[in-house]
Image (tube, rainbow, N blue to C red):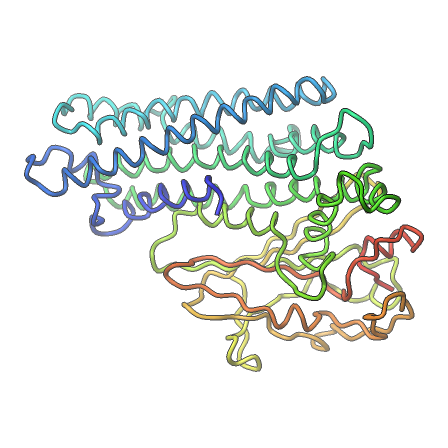
Length: 463
């Protein structure tokens, strides 16, 4: 679990408690409402403890902010100036909102740590600032969201970040940026934005609970979750722009093909795992790719889930079908992937609560466009789950292939390979989230020989 995920889970617990119908055991979400109790009141001790925990988190964030700033300064030195300026112009506006939120949040933490010297006037003033319709927390949330998601007229910060960094992944000579570092910094950059938005939601929940308007506190938590949901496709799409850019780069798989011992070998293997849904290199043992798992874990943590909520996310990944005669009439864009109880694989399927279709394009360069269909399951109980076997159903017919270049190749391709179907997803009180991914009509490990047909290699040996 990443540091940002831990932070999001802790703050999210406070937001969820504040949206609950009762006060949490540690006064979570009701600090400003209960801060003026007597010194003997155990709630006051709980508030002080919470304040110290949040203050320690702020210290960690300060260190990570310094690291992000250092990376930004390095990028300014090496990336194309125009691309950096386009991203920086948007990011400056986001950082202004983060500072505004941070200023209010630090005062909230200070009051929680020192209830004995905090006055009612100070708390009332903070609440007034949080709810200010010109520069309060809700305004900051909306502004950040606009700059993250973007519009038809203006690209969002995540798309601009990916556009800025992707060319650095396509180079074999210096200056270049390693794939691992690019992905790590992209995830950290957005995670910091998520933390700020969650802090703003926390302030809003606290403010309305202090005013005795608990129904509005619940609405604010729910509105925040809708806002984060609207950003998810942008986050995942531009993460995969980095994946696709490195796959196609002279300094990536093409260099690895000519020199398997090159400096980027581990980067290539990680990238193949992300590109081929965890089955890109080591096909003997399927597991979700690390980058996609970390990204989805962070999004789950940012949702401030109630204790009884569970979340499973599944990706179905596939390229355009038009070039492949045997499968071009199969409508994967209409497929609804379902889960089943792991102990009853032939039982009734569980449909997704939400579905997102994401198009990843690398601007007509190899490997070109591909699609991620993202299935989010939220109406589930504690337990173990698998993908429902949909092979041969609703037009998802087996197809024949004559591409037998590896010993493990089979003459028939199925919509879902058994290794995907056998993977078990679990959720319980200690693990509220799980994730997996699969490539439709794919089997075997990715060929690492560029002498093979390139679009066959990078589409997962479709025919």
